[in-house]
Length: 397
Image (tube, rainbow, N blue to C red; front, side, top):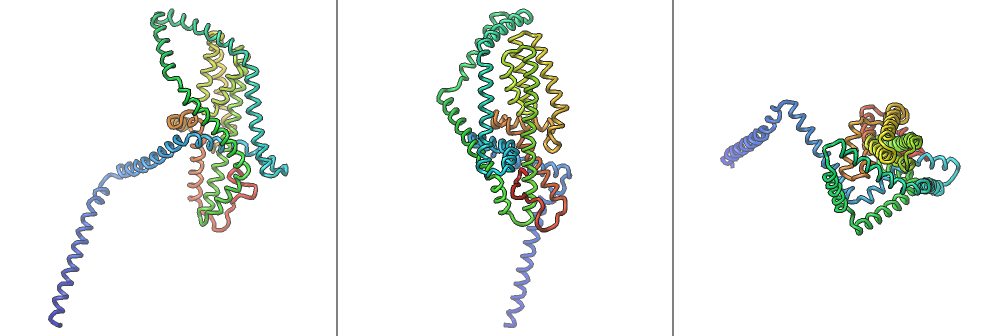
Protein backbone atom coordinates (compact mmCIF):
# COMPACT_ATOMS: atom_id res chain seq x y z
CA UNK A 1 0.00 0.00 0.00
CA UNK A 2 2.81 2.35 0.87
CA UNK A 3 4.53 1.52 -2.39
CA UNK A 4 1.42 2.30 -4.36
CA UNK A 5 0.93 5.71 -2.85
CA UNK A 6 3.83 7.47 -4.64
CA UNK A 7 2.61 6.10 -7.98
CA UNK A 8 -0.83 7.33 -7.25
CA UNK A 9 0.54 10.72 -6.33
CA UNK A 10 2.58 10.84 -9.51
CA UNK A 11 -0.48 9.95 -11.55
CA UNK A 12 -2.48 12.63 -9.83
CA UNK A 13 0.27 15.12 -10.44
CA UNK A 14 0.43 14.12 -14.08
CA UNK A 15 -3.35 14.44 -14.40
CA UNK A 16 -3.31 17.81 -12.74
CA UNK A 17 -0.55 19.03 -15.03
CA UNK A 18 -2.50 17.75 -18.04
CA UNK A 19 -5.60 19.58 -16.90
CA UNK A 20 -3.63 22.74 -16.35
CA UNK A 21 -2.04 22.40 -19.77
CA UNK A 22 -5.48 21.88 -21.34
CA UNK A 23 -6.86 24.93 -19.52
CA UNK A 24 -3.89 27.00 -20.65
CA UNK A 25 -4.40 25.81 -24.22
CA UNK A 26 -8.09 26.66 -24.05
CA UNK A 27 -7.28 30.07 -22.64
CA UNK A 28 -4.69 30.63 -25.33
CA UNK A 29 -7.13 29.49 -28.01
CA UNK A 30 -9.88 31.80 -26.78
CA UNK A 31 -7.53 34.73 -26.37
CA UNK A 32 -6.79 34.81 -30.09
CA UNK A 33 -10.10 36.34 -31.24
CA UNK A 34 -10.23 38.45 -28.10
CA UNK A 35 -6.77 39.86 -28.71
CA UNK A 36 -7.66 40.46 -32.35
CA UNK A 37 -10.82 42.31 -31.25
CA UNK A 38 -8.87 44.42 -28.75
CA UNK A 39 -6.24 45.15 -31.36
CA UNK A 40 -8.84 46.83 -33.59
CA UNK A 41 -9.08 50.63 -33.38
CA UNK A 42 -11.80 51.85 -31.03
CA UNK A 43 -13.59 53.58 -33.90
CA UNK A 44 -13.91 50.28 -35.79
CA UNK A 45 -15.15 48.45 -32.68
CA UNK A 46 -17.73 51.18 -32.02
CA UNK A 47 -18.91 51.11 -35.65
CA UNK A 48 -19.28 47.31 -35.55
CA UNK A 49 -21.30 47.36 -32.32
CA UNK A 50 -23.58 50.18 -33.47
CA UNK A 51 -24.06 48.53 -36.86
CA UNK A 52 -25.05 45.24 -35.22
CA UNK A 53 -27.53 47.01 -32.95
CA UNK A 54 -28.93 48.94 -35.91
CA UNK A 55 -29.36 45.74 -37.93
CA UNK A 56 -31.26 44.11 -35.06
CA UNK A 57 -33.52 47.14 -34.58
CA UNK A 58 -34.23 47.54 -38.30
CA UNK A 59 -34.95 43.81 -38.64
CA UNK A 60 -37.39 43.98 -35.73
CA UNK A 61 -39.14 47.02 -37.17
CA UNK A 62 -39.28 45.37 -40.58
CA UNK A 63 -40.90 42.25 -39.14
CA UNK A 64 -43.42 44.35 -37.22
CA UNK A 65 -44.21 46.28 -40.39
CA UNK A 66 -44.71 43.09 -42.37
CA UNK A 67 -47.02 41.71 -39.69
CA UNK A 68 -48.96 44.99 -39.72
CA UNK A 69 -49.28 44.79 -43.52
CA UNK A 70 -50.56 41.20 -43.33
CA UNK A 71 -53.10 42.31 -40.74
CA UNK A 72 -53.76 45.61 -42.49
CA UNK A 73 -57.49 46.02 -41.64
CA UNK A 74 -56.86 45.26 -37.97
CA UNK A 75 -53.75 47.46 -37.82
CA UNK A 76 -55.55 50.39 -39.47
CA UNK A 77 -58.51 50.00 -37.13
CA UNK A 78 -56.26 49.94 -34.05
CA UNK A 79 -54.26 52.97 -35.22
CA UNK A 80 -57.41 54.96 -35.98
CA UNK A 81 -58.94 53.95 -32.65
CA UNK A 82 -55.94 55.06 -30.59
CA UNK A 83 -55.64 58.31 -32.54
CA UNK A 84 -59.35 59.14 -32.14
CA UNK A 85 -59.28 58.19 -28.46
CA UNK A 86 -56.47 60.65 -27.82
CA UNK A 87 -58.31 63.28 -29.87
CA UNK A 88 -61.67 62.84 -28.11
CA UNK A 89 -60.34 62.31 -24.59
CA UNK A 90 -61.03 65.95 -23.51
CA UNK A 91 -64.66 65.59 -24.64
CA UNK A 92 -65.01 62.42 -22.58
CA UNK A 93 -63.50 64.10 -19.51
CA UNK A 94 -65.89 67.03 -19.89
CA UNK A 95 -68.88 64.68 -19.95
CA UNK A 96 -67.54 62.78 -16.95
CA UNK A 97 -67.24 66.05 -15.02
CA UNK A 98 -70.94 66.55 -15.74
CA UNK A 99 -71.60 63.43 -13.61
CA UNK A 100 -72.32 61.15 -16.58
CA UNK A 101 -71.37 57.47 -16.12
CA UNK A 102 -68.56 56.05 -18.22
CA UNK A 103 -70.72 54.14 -20.73
CA UNK A 104 -73.16 56.99 -21.62
CA UNK A 105 -70.26 59.47 -21.80
CA UNK A 106 -68.33 57.20 -24.20
CA UNK A 107 -71.45 56.59 -26.30
CA UNK A 108 -72.22 60.31 -26.56
CA UNK A 109 -68.63 61.02 -27.58
CA UNK A 110 -68.78 58.43 -30.38
CA UNK A 111 -72.17 59.74 -31.55
CA UNK A 112 -70.79 63.28 -31.56
CA UNK A 113 -67.93 62.15 -33.80
CA UNK A 114 -70.30 60.37 -36.18
CA UNK A 115 -72.61 63.40 -36.30
CA UNK A 116 -69.74 65.72 -37.22
CA UNK A 117 -68.42 63.38 -39.94
CA UNK A 118 -71.84 62.70 -41.48
CA UNK A 119 -72.81 66.37 -41.29
CA UNK A 120 -69.61 67.52 -43.01
CA UNK A 121 -69.96 64.86 -45.70
CA UNK A 122 -73.57 65.84 -46.43
CA UNK A 123 -72.68 69.55 -46.47
CA UNK A 124 -69.81 69.06 -48.90
CA UNK A 125 -71.94 66.91 -51.19
CA UNK A 126 -74.91 69.29 -51.23
CA UNK A 127 -72.74 72.33 -51.94
CA UNK A 128 -70.54 70.79 -54.61
CA UNK A 129 -72.57 68.09 -56.38
CA UNK A 130 -73.80 70.60 -58.97
CA UNK A 131 -70.26 71.77 -59.75
CA UNK A 132 -68.87 68.48 -61.02
CA UNK A 133 -70.35 68.85 -64.52
CA UNK A 134 -69.02 72.40 -64.71
CA UNK A 135 -65.60 71.24 -63.54
CA UNK A 136 -65.55 68.48 -66.18
CA UNK A 137 -66.17 71.02 -68.95
CA UNK A 138 -63.56 73.42 -67.56
CA UNK A 139 -61.02 70.62 -67.22
CA UNK A 140 -61.58 69.75 -70.88
CA UNK A 141 -61.04 73.36 -71.89
CA UNK A 142 -57.99 73.58 -69.63
CA UNK A 143 -56.50 70.47 -71.19
CA UNK A 144 -57.05 71.92 -74.64
CA UNK A 145 -55.28 75.15 -73.62
CA UNK A 146 -52.45 73.14 -72.09
CA UNK A 147 -52.18 71.11 -75.28
CA UNK A 148 -51.92 74.24 -77.42
CA UNK A 149 -49.31 75.69 -75.07
CA UNK A 150 -47.19 72.53 -75.18
CA UNK A 151 -47.30 72.15 -78.97
CA UNK A 152 -46.56 75.84 -79.57
CA UNK A 153 -43.80 76.26 -76.98
CA UNK A 154 -42.03 72.89 -77.00
CA UNK A 155 -40.63 70.77 -79.86
CA UNK A 156 -43.54 68.33 -79.60
CA UNK A 157 -45.98 67.58 -82.42
CA UNK A 158 -49.67 66.78 -82.11
CA UNK A 159 -49.03 63.17 -83.18
CA UNK A 160 -46.40 62.67 -80.47
CA UNK A 161 -48.68 64.17 -77.84
CA UNK A 162 -51.59 61.98 -78.95
CA UNK A 163 -49.34 58.91 -78.77
CA UNK A 164 -48.29 59.85 -75.23
CA UNK A 165 -51.90 60.36 -74.15
CA UNK A 166 -52.87 56.97 -75.62
CA UNK A 167 -50.04 55.28 -73.71
CA UNK A 168 -51.19 56.89 -70.47
CA UNK A 169 -54.77 55.74 -71.09
CA UNK A 170 -53.63 52.18 -71.80
CA UNK A 171 -51.57 52.17 -68.61
CA UNK A 172 -54.55 53.36 -66.61
CA UNK A 173 -56.77 50.67 -68.14
CA UNK A 174 -54.17 48.02 -67.36
CA UNK A 175 -53.88 49.15 -63.73
CA UNK A 176 -57.63 49.39 -63.19
CA UNK A 177 -58.69 47.38 -60.14
CA UNK A 178 -60.36 44.01 -60.42
CA UNK A 179 -64.07 44.20 -59.46
CA UNK A 180 -63.67 41.23 -57.10
CA UNK A 181 -60.62 42.80 -55.45
CA UNK A 182 -62.44 46.12 -55.26
CA UNK A 183 -65.43 44.52 -53.54
CA UNK A 184 -63.12 42.76 -51.09
CA UNK A 185 -61.31 46.02 -50.35
CA UNK A 186 -64.61 47.82 -49.80
CA UNK A 187 -65.70 45.06 -47.40
CA UNK A 188 -62.40 45.31 -45.50
CA UNK A 189 -62.72 49.09 -45.26
CA UNK A 190 -66.30 48.84 -43.95
CA UNK A 191 -65.24 46.19 -41.45
CA UNK A 192 -62.29 48.30 -40.30
CA UNK A 193 -64.53 51.33 -39.77
CA UNK A 194 -67.04 49.31 -37.77
CA UNK A 195 -64.29 47.70 -35.69
CA UNK A 196 -62.67 51.09 -35.06
CA UNK A 197 -65.96 52.55 -33.79
CA UNK A 198 -66.57 49.61 -31.44
CA UNK A 199 -63.01 49.72 -30.13
CA UNK A 200 -63.28 53.49 -29.73
CA UNK A 201 -66.31 53.09 -27.50
CA UNK A 202 -64.59 50.51 -25.29
CA UNK A 203 -61.34 52.47 -25.05
CA UNK A 204 -63.20 55.63 -24.08
CA UNK A 205 -65.24 53.69 -21.54
CA UNK A 206 -62.61 51.36 -20.04
CA UNK A 207 -59.27 52.71 -21.23
CA UNK A 208 -58.21 54.07 -17.86
CA UNK A 209 -59.19 50.91 -16.01
CA UNK A 210 -57.19 48.91 -18.56
CA UNK A 211 -54.16 51.12 -17.90
CA UNK A 212 -54.60 50.67 -14.13
CA UNK A 213 -54.74 46.90 -14.66
CA UNK A 214 -51.45 46.99 -16.62
CA UNK A 215 -49.75 49.06 -13.91
CA UNK A 216 -51.07 46.80 -11.15
CA UNK A 217 -49.34 43.82 -12.78
CA UNK A 218 -45.97 45.57 -12.62
CA UNK A 219 -43.93 45.41 -9.43
CA UNK A 220 -40.58 46.73 -8.34
CA UNK A 221 -38.65 49.68 -9.78
CA UNK A 222 -40.18 49.32 -13.26
CA UNK A 223 -43.64 50.50 -12.20
CA UNK A 224 -42.82 54.22 -11.83
CA UNK A 225 -40.91 54.42 -15.11
CA UNK A 226 -43.70 52.61 -17.00
CA UNK A 227 -46.28 54.95 -15.47
CA UNK A 228 -44.28 58.03 -16.40
CA UNK A 229 -43.44 56.79 -19.91
CA UNK A 230 -47.07 55.84 -20.58
CA UNK A 231 -48.34 59.19 -19.38
CA UNK A 232 -45.72 61.07 -21.45
CA UNK A 233 -46.54 59.06 -24.57
CA UNK A 234 -50.28 59.60 -24.14
CA UNK A 235 -49.79 63.34 -23.59
CA UNK A 236 -47.69 63.48 -26.75
CA UNK A 237 -50.28 61.61 -28.83
CA UNK A 238 -53.11 63.79 -27.54
CA UNK A 239 -51.20 67.02 -28.13
CA UNK A 240 -50.16 65.85 -31.60
CA UNK A 241 -53.66 64.81 -32.66
CA UNK A 242 -55.36 67.98 -31.44
CA UNK A 243 -52.57 70.25 -32.68
CA UNK A 244 -52.49 68.60 -36.09
CA UNK A 245 -56.27 68.87 -36.43
CA UNK A 246 -56.17 72.57 -35.51
CA UNK A 247 -53.35 73.35 -37.93
CA UNK A 248 -55.01 71.35 -40.73
CA UNK A 249 -58.29 73.22 -40.12
CA UNK A 250 -56.50 76.59 -40.30
CA UNK A 251 -54.78 75.58 -43.56
CA UNK A 252 -58.08 74.41 -45.04
CA UNK A 253 -59.89 77.61 -44.05
CA UNK A 254 -57.12 79.85 -45.39
CA UNK A 255 -56.73 78.07 -48.71
CA UNK A 256 -60.51 77.61 -49.05
CA UNK A 257 -61.11 81.35 -48.61
CA UNK A 258 -58.43 82.11 -51.21
CA UNK A 259 -60.11 79.73 -53.67
CA UNK A 260 -63.51 81.34 -53.02
CA UNK A 261 -62.08 84.83 -53.60
CA UNK A 262 -60.38 83.67 -56.81
CA UNK A 263 -63.65 81.96 -57.89
CA UNK A 264 -62.06 78.56 -58.33
CA UNK A 265 -64.74 75.84 -58.60
CA UNK A 266 -65.01 73.10 -55.98
CA UNK A 267 -63.42 75.30 -53.34
CA UNK A 268 -65.03 73.32 -50.50
CA UNK A 269 -63.83 69.86 -51.64
CA UNK A 270 -60.37 71.29 -52.23
CA UNK A 271 -60.41 72.74 -48.73
CA UNK A 272 -61.44 69.31 -47.41
CA UNK A 273 -58.55 67.70 -49.30
CA UNK A 274 -56.23 70.30 -47.74
CA UNK A 275 -57.59 69.44 -44.28
CA UNK A 276 -56.99 65.71 -44.79
CA UNK A 277 -53.55 66.38 -46.26
CA UNK A 278 -52.61 68.30 -43.13
CA UNK A 279 -52.45 65.01 -41.21
CA UNK A 280 -49.45 63.98 -43.34
CA UNK A 281 -46.83 66.63 -42.47
CA UNK A 282 -44.94 68.36 -45.30
CA UNK A 283 -45.93 65.89 -48.04
CA UNK A 284 -49.70 66.08 -47.50
CA UNK A 285 -49.82 69.88 -47.58
CA UNK A 286 -47.66 69.93 -50.73
CA UNK A 287 -49.87 67.45 -52.58
CA UNK A 288 -53.08 69.22 -51.53
CA UNK A 289 -51.70 72.58 -52.65
CA UNK A 290 -50.66 71.10 -55.99
CA UNK A 291 -54.18 69.75 -56.55
CA UNK A 292 -55.67 73.18 -55.83
CA UNK A 293 -53.26 74.86 -58.26
CA UNK A 294 -54.01 72.33 -61.01
CA UNK A 295 -57.77 72.81 -60.63
CA UNK A 296 -57.31 76.59 -60.74
CA UNK A 297 -55.16 76.24 -63.88
CA UNK A 298 -57.72 74.07 -65.63
CA UNK A 299 -60.70 76.19 -64.61
CA UNK A 300 -59.46 79.81 -64.70
CA UNK A 301 -56.15 79.84 -66.51
CA UNK A 302 -52.50 80.51 -65.59
CA UNK A 303 -53.06 83.87 -63.84
CA UNK A 304 -55.50 82.40 -61.33
CA UNK A 305 -53.24 79.38 -60.93
CA UNK A 306 -50.29 81.61 -60.03
CA UNK A 307 -52.42 83.54 -57.55
CA UNK A 308 -53.60 80.24 -56.04
CA UNK A 309 -49.99 79.08 -55.76
CA UNK A 310 -49.06 82.32 -54.00
CA UNK A 311 -51.98 81.90 -51.56
CA UNK A 312 -51.03 78.28 -50.82
CA UNK A 313 -47.40 79.22 -50.16
CA UNK A 314 -48.41 82.16 -47.94
CA UNK A 315 -50.78 80.05 -45.84
CA UNK A 316 -48.23 77.26 -45.43
CA UNK A 317 -45.48 79.69 -44.46
CA UNK A 318 -47.69 81.31 -41.83
CA UNK A 319 -48.67 77.90 -40.52
CA UNK A 320 -45.12 76.52 -40.45
CA UNK A 321 -43.35 79.55 -38.98
CA UNK A 322 -46.00 81.03 -36.68
CA UNK A 323 -48.83 78.65 -35.85
CA UNK A 324 -46.98 75.35 -35.53
CA UNK A 325 -44.48 76.61 -32.91
CA UNK A 326 -47.41 77.96 -30.88
CA UNK A 327 -49.75 74.99 -31.22
CA UNK A 328 -47.23 72.15 -31.20
CA UNK A 329 -45.26 72.10 -28.00
CA UNK A 330 -41.56 71.39 -27.93
CA UNK A 331 -42.03 67.78 -26.83
CA UNK A 332 -44.28 67.08 -29.83
CA UNK A 333 -42.31 68.72 -32.62
CA UNK A 334 -39.86 66.69 -34.68
CA UNK A 335 -37.11 67.77 -37.03
CA UNK A 336 -38.28 68.01 -40.68
CA UNK A 337 -35.66 65.44 -41.72
CA UNK A 338 -37.07 62.96 -39.18
CA UNK A 339 -40.60 63.67 -40.42
CA UNK A 340 -39.64 63.06 -44.06
CA UNK A 341 -37.89 59.80 -43.23
CA UNK A 342 -40.82 58.63 -41.09
CA UNK A 343 -43.44 59.52 -43.73
CA UNK A 344 -41.40 57.86 -46.48
CA UNK A 345 -40.89 54.69 -44.44
CA UNK A 346 -44.56 54.56 -43.47
CA UNK A 347 -45.63 55.03 -47.08
CA UNK A 348 -43.32 52.27 -48.31
CA UNK A 349 -44.52 49.86 -45.63
CA UNK A 350 -48.28 50.53 -45.53
CA UNK A 351 -49.13 53.06 -48.24
CA UNK A 352 -51.41 55.98 -47.41
CA UNK A 353 -52.35 54.57 -44.01
CA UNK A 354 -48.66 54.29 -43.12
CA UNK A 355 -48.09 57.91 -44.12
CA UNK A 356 -50.86 59.01 -41.74
CA UNK A 357 -49.66 57.07 -38.69
CA UNK A 358 -45.88 57.17 -39.14
CA UNK A 359 -45.28 60.63 -37.65
CA UNK A 360 -47.43 60.23 -34.48
CA UNK A 361 -45.86 56.81 -33.86
CA UNK A 362 -42.39 58.34 -34.21
CA UNK A 363 -43.26 61.23 -31.90
CA UNK A 364 -44.72 58.94 -29.22
CA UNK A 365 -41.80 56.49 -29.37
CA UNK A 366 -39.26 59.29 -29.12
CA UNK A 367 -41.10 60.80 -26.16
CA UNK A 368 -41.25 57.44 -24.37
CA UNK A 369 -37.54 56.73 -24.95
CA UNK A 370 -36.60 60.22 -23.80
CA UNK A 371 -38.72 59.86 -20.65
CA UNK A 372 -37.19 56.48 -19.79
CA UNK A 373 -33.67 57.84 -20.23
CA UNK A 374 -34.38 60.87 -18.03
CA UNK A 375 -36.01 58.67 -15.40
CA UNK A 376 -33.01 56.33 -15.24
CA UNK A 377 -30.53 59.18 -15.04
CA UNK A 378 -32.43 60.81 -12.14
CA UNK A 379 -32.29 59.20 -8.68
CA UNK A 380 -35.73 58.34 -7.29
CA UNK A 381 -36.75 57.54 -3.74
CA UNK A 382 -38.30 54.19 -2.96
CA UNK A 383 -41.94 54.03 -2.05
CA UNK A 384 -45.23 54.95 -3.70
CA UNK A 385 -44.68 56.88 -6.88
CA UNK A 386 -46.30 60.23 -7.37
CA UNK A 387 -46.48 59.37 -11.05
CA UNK A 388 -49.29 56.90 -10.46
CA UNK A 389 -52.52 58.24 -11.82
CA UNK A 390 -55.65 58.88 -9.84
CA UNK A 391 -59.08 57.36 -10.36
CA UNK A 392 -59.88 59.64 -13.30
CA UNK A 393 -56.34 59.46 -14.63
CA UNK A 394 -54.68 57.24 -17.10
CA UNK A 395 -52.01 57.76 -19.64
CA UNK A 396 -53.99 60.72 -20.87
CA UNK A 397 -54.12 62.62 -17.61
